[in-house]
Image (cartoon, rainbow over all chains, first blue to last red; front, side, top):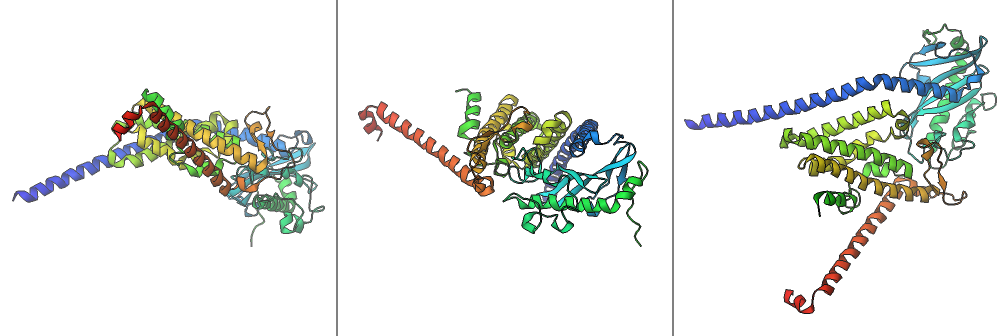
Amino acid sequence: MSEPIEVTQRESGVFRISLRTATIMLAFTLVFTALMAGTYKATAPMVAASTLAEKLRLIGEVLPAATYDNDLMADAITLPPQASLGLDEETRLWRARKAGAPVALVLEAAAPDGYSGRIGLIVAIGADGKLIAVRVTAHKETPGLGDYINPKKDRNKARPWITQFSNLGFDTVPREKWRVKKDGGRFDQMSGATISARAVTNASGRALAWTLENRDKLFALPANSRFEARSTP
Amino acid sequence: MSIYKDIAWNGLWKQNSILAQVLGLCPLLAVSTSLVNAVSLGLATILVMMLSNFAISALRALIPYEIRIPVFVLIIAALVTVVDLAFNAFLHDMYLVLGIFIPLIVTNCIVLARVEAFAAKNGLRASTLDGLMMGVGFVWVIALLGAVRELVGQGTLFSGIEMIVPTWSMIQVLPESYPGFLIAMLPPGAFFVLGLLIAGRNWLDARANQRLREQRLHDQPPAATTAVA
C-alpha cells in the first residue's frame, strides 16, 4: 500500500525540481533579454545619429558639396523597395540641384551576390547620365582579400579600384560592356577576389540603368513624396 | 607561486587557448588575414571574455548545474550584443572597423570554455583575471598569425592601421614588386601557419622538459639515482 504513495512523492519531487529549473531559466532569459532591450533602447538615438552622420559623409564622398547648393536632406524622396536596385526595404533618394537646375541624384543600391552576402552601395548619378561616383556602405567580404572594394582597404591608394567607375556613362562604356574583364567587360578585377568586384560592377551598372530610365520623373517629384514605379497593368 | 601568477602563465602559455587547447579556430582563421584585423578582433575578444567571466562568476551561485550551459550561452550572447551596441553608439569610428568582428566572438568557443572551466568555479577577481589572460594569450597568437599571413600574403605589415590611427600608415616590408602569395591569405594558409606555430610551441616545451630532466640528473648524485631506480 505504501508503494504508490512513495512513487507519487518521488514524481512530485522531480516535478518540483523541473519547475524550479524552468523558472530559473525563464528568469535568466527575462533579465538578459531586458538587458539587451534596454541597451538597444538607450543606444538607438546615438546609433541613428551616427548612421545619419555616416550617410552624410558618404554622400560627400560620392558627390562634392561644391557642385550643388540645395539642402539635400530636405530635397529627398522616398523610394519603395526596388528589386532592380537590389533593395528590399524603403530608402531615401537625394536630389542635388544648383540654382534650381538638376545636378545629380544620390541613391542607395545593393549587390545581393557578394562573396559573403549583400554589399550595400551609395551611388551618385549626374543629370547628364554619367555615374559620378560609387562607394561601398556595408559589406562582409573577406578581410584582406575581397575588401578592396572599400577604398580605405584598397592597397592602391592613388587610384583605388572603385574609382574606375567615376565619370563613366553608357555613352563611353556600353551597357553590355559594364562588366568585369573576366566576364568580357571593361572593368578590372583583382585575381582571387573576382566575385566581390563582379557584384559591385553589376550592381552599379543596374543602378545606372534604373536611374537613367526614371531620371526625369525622379527630379520632377515634389520633395518628400513617394516614388511609384510605372503603374503595372 | 601565487594563484594569480598561475592564471597568467596558464593563459599566456601553458593552457594557451589556441596553442594548447586549440579552441576558437573559426574566428581565428577567418580574421587573421592581417595584423590589424587580428589584433582588433583580439581586443574585442578580451573585453567579452572579461565581462562574461565576471558576470558568470558573480551569478554562479544562482545557476543550477543542469541548465548551466544554456544559461552561459544566453549570458555570453547578451553580453556580446551589449558590447556590439555600445561600440556602435559610443565608439562609432571604431565600430566601423571592428563592427563586423564583434558578432564573430559568439562563435569563439574559448569564451564558453573558460566560463565553464573556470568562472563557474572561482571567485570574481580570479575569474576576471582568467578572462583577461586567456584573452591576451589569444591576442598574441592571433597577432603573430595575422602578421605572418600578411607578410607572406602581401608583403606588408599594419595594412589598415590608418582606419584606427589616421596618421599612421602600413609598412611595406617586402619590395612593392613582391607578387604576394595568395594561399597565405586563404584559409589553407591559415592552417599551415597555425600548424607551424603549434609545432613551434611543442618543440619549445619539449626542449624545456629535456633541459629540466638533464638538470635533475646533473644535480642528483649518481648514488641517489641508482637508489631511485
